[in-house]
Image 1: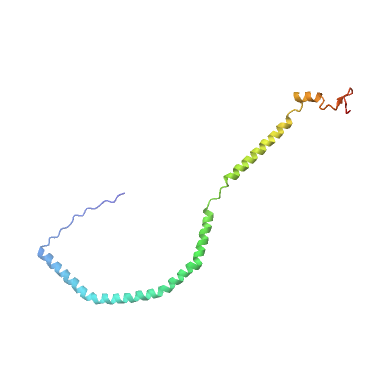
Image 2: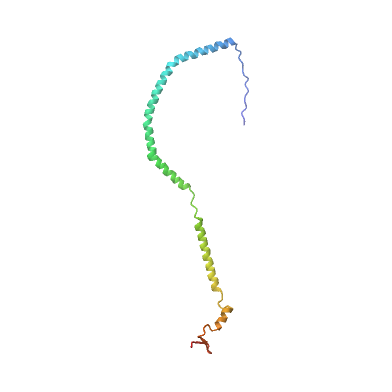
Amino acid sequence: MFLKERYRPSTRVKIDRAQLQRMQEMSKEGAYRAKERLGPTTQAARVIAAERMLEAREWSAPRLVRAAHYVETELGPRVGTLLAKAADKVEPPRRQRQRRNTAMKTLVAASAIGAVGAVVSRRIPTNSPKQSEDVLEPSSPMTKPSTDGQARIP
């Protein structure tokens, strides 16, 4: 909701020039009298303020030195440790190296292929047509087949 602006008609006061000049002269005289009366007081206040500022500086300097020493020796290391702990909490966990993962995957795949190959080679039947012909023929000239089915060595 917007506030409505009220319109106030300005009231105009009719002042003639002579009256305006007289008011300006009176305000100048009043300012001059105030300057004469307040001048010495402001000078004294300035001197007192300068002395008090010097006293305040003398009082605060050793306290500032002590505070600086405390920050450097006690507070600074504590804040540093606090910031280091916060950084450790904020930092995301390190990712594992891609090379290790790739090497492990390759090793697992190779061993799986080897295991499958071993299983397949054992399941192949040993009496293939080529091997059955070799079994019937004598393997060496020293052995001669006999009639009773036993091989004799001469």
